[in-house]
Structure formats: C-alpha cells, structure tokens
Length: 362
Image (tube, rainbow, N blue to C red; front, side):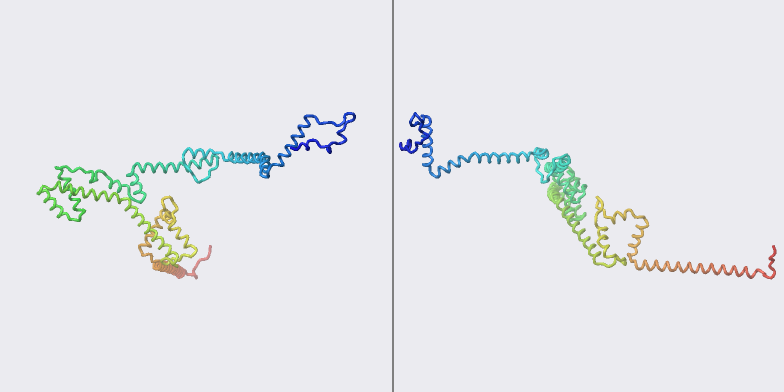
C-alpha cells in the first residue's frame, strides 16, 4: 500500500487544528480503523466478477434456505393430510386391494366389509375346490345343468371297473363283466351266451374277464373325463335352441298382423313379447307362466279346448254365432207360442160368456 495515501496535507482542514495545540493527530485506534477500511476497499476492487457473484449468492443463500424451508413445510402439510384411514388400514391388514372408494364412516366400513367378505368367500371356495377336485367337477356338472344323481352314479366306486377285484372263483362276476363288454360292442344275447359257454369250457373265463374289465375301465375313465364337457355342450345346445325359438317368436309377433284370427295392435306387440319371454320371478317364470298357473280351471280348459279344436277361431266363432242365433230364434218362437196360447185362452173365455145374460147387480 502507498504510504502517501495514509496522510495527505490536503486532507488537513481547519477543523483539525485546535487552538493552542497545533495539528491534531489521530489516535492509534482511529488510525487502525482507517487502515482496515482502506484494505477492505482494495480487496473488493481486486476481486473478479465471478468472485463478486459468488459473494452475492452467498449473501442471498439465507433467503433461498427460507424458501426451501417453507416448501418443505407445505409438503409436510400435504403428507399429513393423506393420513391412512381406518378402512385403508383394515384393507392393508387383510391384504386386499379394491378399486372402490369407501367413506371413512360406519356405512363405508359396512360396505367395504360386505365386498371383502364376498371376495374372501370366493377365495375360500377356490381353495376348497383345488383341494377336492372331485367336488369341483361335481359342482361344474350341476351348474351346467346336469343331474347330481347321474354324476354320483358315474363316480360310484362300486361301479368302477378300475377298482374292481376279480377273484378266480367268482364266475358270476366274470360272466357279468364279459356280458357288459359284449353288450357295449353291440352283440346280441345269443352271441354273448355262446361266447360265455365257450370261454367256460376252454377254461378262459377268468382271463377273458380280466381283459374285458381293463377295456371297460379305460372306456369308463374317458367317459368320466368327458362328463363335464359333454354336459356343457348339451347346455350350450339347449341355450342355442332356446334362443332360436325366442327369435322365431319375436319375428312372428313383429311380422304378423293376426294370430289365428286374433288381431294384435302394433303398440302391444313389444309388451306381448315381454309378457311371454321376460322372467319375473327367481325361478325364471314369465308373467304368462304366473298367470296360467293362477288361472281358473275353466280358463285352462278353454285354452286346452282351443288347442284340441286346432285353435280355429273362425269356426268356433261361427259355431258360437249360429248357436246364439238358433237360441234367439227358439226364444222368439217360444214367446210367440206363449202369446198364441194366451190369445186362445182369452178367446175361449170370451166364447163361453153370455154377455146378454150377465148379471151386473151387486
């Protein structure tokens, strides 16, 4: 640092001169303060632009940190607002995820419980079905429209050829198995009887019965495996036939102007089809079925009589009209006969009375 910058004569003013004391010099402390102030100015001037920017950034850091603190507090507030509800905690413990949103109330908890309980029941049923495959097949067979008795008979262990033990001296069972085998092959009773006698005479009855049992066992196993699939195919065929039937009914109602002489207005056709086809009960009965079951005996007999007569309404109506006309004619004739009889009686009474000799006195 230049020593001339420390004390300059130009810097001395009149105020610096104290009367009687001459020029007042600065104290050591004041002198050090001035030196430090001059050194700081020189250091600032020697700093580069980048260093000044760093200094500015360092000065602004507290403000940035304050902003970050504020942002963090906002996030904490948001996280606090997403606290787990009772329902979410219950679902988490049960291990179920649901798409529905349930209110964190008693009603919401009840709805969630019903839905989860249903899913738990389904899962439990699946576990049982996997553990007992025969039960699963039985249920599938019944759901496909099969009769439970038929399934039980097909899986009856007493009728399972694969589990049957055929003793050497059990001639009756041997003949029964061979008879069943040849029957399934399409042979008649006389042929079967002859074959059994030949096997017995040749001492081959037991051996042939064992072969027949194995063959029947294989066929029986395949039948069991196809039992559920065959029932499903039968159900699909029935549903297809039913759909075809109702399509035909709908087309007939839509395209026809009258049904065996009965006219149905266009505005009633759709309602009439629903009356015939739409189930209205848990058992699948339609309104037509319900009304028919509740109808009086005379109504049922009238419908059956119409079917018996071929549902030819024109002939029935004409017959009814003729019968009514005949009855009306008979009534008229009967009334006329009564009038004639009354007139005849009056005439007889008039002829028998002598008006000239009639006594009018009291």
